[in-house]
Amino acid sequence: MIILGVILLIAGFLLNISILWTIGIVLVVIGAVLAILGGTGRKVGGRAHWF
Image 1 (cartoon, rainbow, N blue to C red):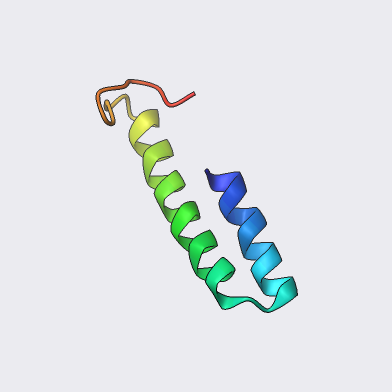
Image 2: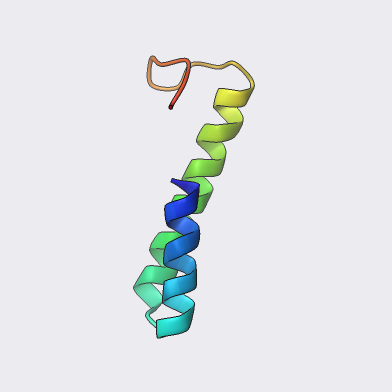
């Protein structure tokens, strides 16, 4: 999810499309939160791992 967010951020910046930029930021933030929660051992959505 983080990688997709970064790709959308780059595409939004290069193509000057603000909606891609916004979606990219949201995906990066959500991906980072899930990665942090998963790294601490906390179950997210009933799953211990998201891979």
